[in-house]
Amino acid sequence: MSEICFTGVQHAYGARVVLDGIDLRLSEQRIGIIGANGSGKSTLARMINGLVTPTEGSVTFDGMDVAHHGKDVRRKVGFIFTDPDNQIVMPTVGEDIAFTLRRTKLSKAEVSAKVSAIAHRFGLTDHLEHPAHLLSGGQKQLLALASVMVGEPAVLVADEPTTLLDARNARMIAQVLTDLPEQVVVVTHQLELLTDFDRVIVIEEGKVAGDDAPAKAISRYRALLELPS
Ligand SMILES: Nc1ncnc2c1ncn2[C@@H]1O[C@H](COP(=O)(O)OP(=O)(O)OP(=O)(O)O)[C@@H](O)[C@H]1O
Image (cartoon, rainbow, N blue to C red):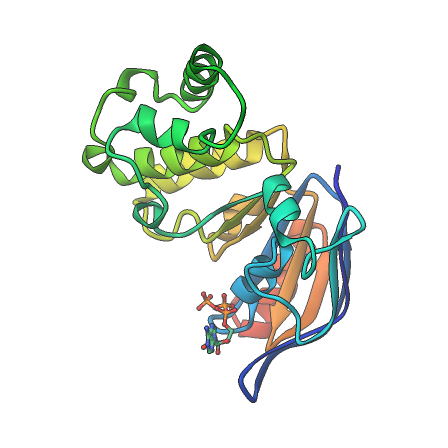
């Protein structure tokens, strides 16, 4: 597994500090990040691949400082967002997956083989020729995943990947993420998604307020929100 290290990390948007004093060494296979709205989870997740850089401290990915090696890190850290429509860029499913490989030196046949293999892995084989915008919400999230994973990142970061999905599709995407052999970091409000995860970080008002196995971290979070456990 890769090692993601936050050392003395602060992030401020203008004068507003939204993350502070973050020290984390993440090397487990499945890591969840939970916390109330606005607590700083997305900001933390975006720091892993340099979409957001710290205003103090540093984030490293396998020893590379993300602020200085953003491009190299982004090759190793795939990212999916809440709304797959924001990352589907090509008209058809097959073209969208192939788009990720456009800057590689692979031959047409090699690209085609990789697209077929990843479509098969994410259950999209029958949709390769279909317009991406006609897919269901769950299928679009699968396409976003396939288009990222075809680039063979070492880690996938997913920021609330099930928020826009109905319960059945949310469960399906949760299962797909849980079963990925790659390392995953998932920000979510869907706490049951994290049942089989290795570690869950609780963020509260920009600080780490819990860091434990799922059951304990989730009870800590419920206690913070004053919800029944
Ligand atoms: N680009 C930005 N400019 C200014 N403030 C921002 C920006 N992005 C986020 N914020 C603020 O930073 C704080 C943390 O936001 P962040 O999106 O990281 O929280 P979150 O825990 O992911 O929230 P949610 O669960 O609602 O998605 C919030 O108060 C938010 O309004």
